[in-house]
Length: 154
Image 1 (tube, rainbow, N blue to C red):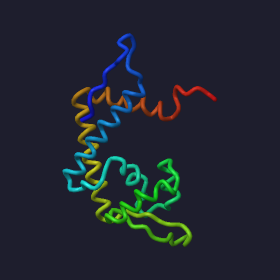
Image 2 (cartoon, one colour):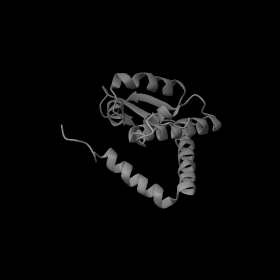
Image 3 (cartoon, one colour):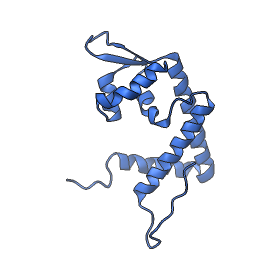
């Protein structure tokens, strides 16, 4: 579990970014623990975006990198790790032989299932602790933030 945040400046609330970051770290720690308990101790929550971005029939490596928001070069190490551990397979794209296609293996599909169980359990705990209506409202607000609410034009 993530350590609680302390506010060094008692005269104002903690910055929202700090709170969001701490909440994300809390969920990541839950996901890490859940994956390890399910037998996937060689994975971390940091791998989750890769698993989430792979289409059922496979995804081109360049598209995968773009979906995650990193360069193809930045994807090379985690992709190599996941391929070595047999979570994914990388092959030439049958449509464009110059492109590389990334697909989940059955072991990779098992990770997705285990990860979703952890996330669903975490969501259920939130529903129980603060109420389903409050969680739904939080989802709406966070979606607005992600979609650009509050940004100042440059």
